[in-house]
Length: 187
Image (cartoon, rainbow, N blue to C red; front, top):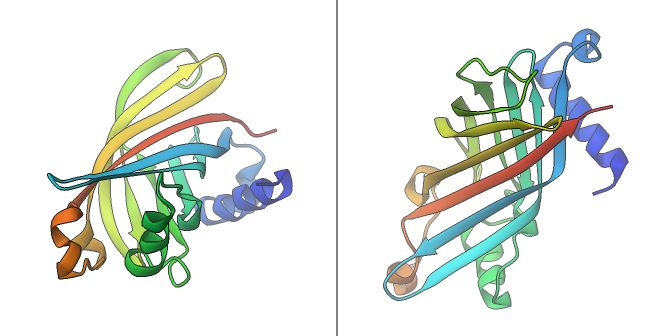
């Protein structure tokens, strides 16, 4: 993703999260190279995919956080799986992104290195369906960077993702998602 698109994403999300007048005064951290993985494990087949272009922004003054990823940026070991994911299940042309927008629930001291158990509560959207979620994870402050990590489940039924009966036993009904984002200060 180009630097200009990253800046545009930050400004758009920043505009949603806070008034533009206060944007410059806030402590903003972001990435456009976050790593999001998901896995579906069943006795018949394991499906894994990875997206290394997930975007995230964190306002350390307010605890507001937002994530966004393009569904077509997930890569699979098998191109046929990738095609089925985009065309038949996620319908990426119709629902091109997944997003989370919310707030960190705990107080975190971003001014010094440390690791915190944390959660964020907000709106999680996949396949055009938005649900209020609390997602648990860890926040690590180290060397001027902020690392956000989380592992959580996404139920296909919650987001109206339908699996044809013929492959129903090959795809888990709860998908494990792992997020690993290293955020740097926005300059």
